[in-house]
Length: 312
Image (cartoon, rainbow, N blue to C red; front, top):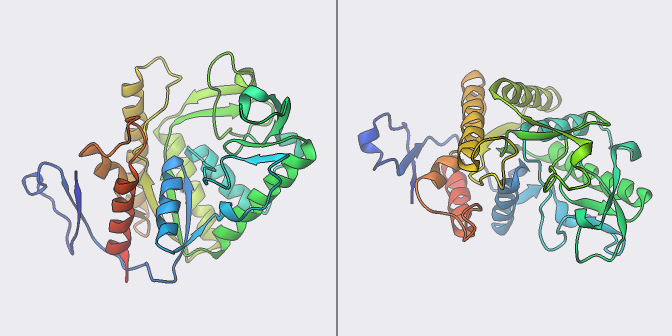
């Protein structure tokens, strides 16, 4: 397993990297005991939020605080687990723009789906879904509007109040909703899925993702010029690819693209900090039995090192 090495100067020589397992990082001192964090992105952002909360830190969006009716509303796995994800730069840019414009998703932005789409545990024959967020459902259109509004308010408040924005980049394979032009947080499970014909798949490239991320940073700083922004690339691999590539090759293509985007953003905007979560995970087997998701102890080590390195 790799180790993070806080240092006043980064190591430029491979032969001092302990076969790539020593990652030097220079502390910037922007974290204090009262720092408020906002973490958004792929499912690794969920892990980051939880690891920060476990340390008693102030973390947004505070999805676990959302009040809802479990008989008629289903916000992912809440209250057991916060798993409201935004996997790609399109979904992140879309959500941040909505928040800064103080907009809400409207009834026209939601769709009705069958039981397969939401939960085998629910007895609902049909449900309405907010496809801009992961697994957000309700039994009525009014119910989904209400639940979506609460999620929007939670995101808006967290972004406004935070000191540090952590954006976790996960995927480059995206799904555009044909009817609205918005981007779905999650694509179909297979070609037989009822939402498959409602979506348009695209394997996106470097420039699109760079433009999305740059625009997101510009929007945040235009509204909140003092926000500190941290980028990281999720080590969690693709569950499946919708390209004609092998999934291992497609996953590396996706992560390489996002890592290149993050690297260029940091070069273009020195005020942005990159945290090497992906590099840490790639130097050893830090994954759960599924070989995809990062073990809690490894997530904890990544977050602990981040806090230690950048604390004032």
